[in-house]
Length: 283
Image (cartoon, rainbow, N blue to C red):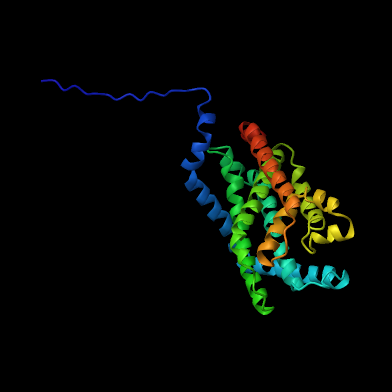
């Protein structure tokens, strides 16, 4: 009696375009990697500092004090408003600091994960997306500080504060879209790592962080205010202020900012995907 062994042969099929076709499904398949990278970035941000998560409180607090003094006291922008000026400033700081931090982290994310990119396959989109999670944690910490400031000034926010997550999503989308575009450029042209700090430094003054966007209409015209909203963060900050302070939102400018956000998101994803195959060679 003879024994016959059955051998199972695995067949490897190489199908052109299969990776592209399953790319978005792979994002879900590699969700655990997204969680691991996000958690790693959070630990690195806070674990290797002396005061840890307190930086999430100190930075917005000091910025609020400086902006309140410069724009409120010296610029006399705190006159004639029923809203405490520190709260008005803080409402603008929340989305701006999230955007600035997320843009800086995501734009350098591919370069700082060189070893991972050159060794294994996974959708590279995961890396810049996971880097923004740290900025969301900072945003949560800063919001808790805002609650304390509102308690000190005995300020009760309006009911639309419940819609704040919607504008947080808008801030995430513009940060993600712009971050994807710049991080893809940064792989090939390392000069862009010097461009982002300049954009952040300049942007805080051409964005209504320390002042209301209504000032633009008062000093110039509604038309100038409308085109001012080509800066996508103008609509996001106006939305935050509407939720937190009840300040009326300028709807034409908000819609323009929303269109620009979607444009940046489309541009970032399109350019990132078109250059993704060359990351391992150029990085």
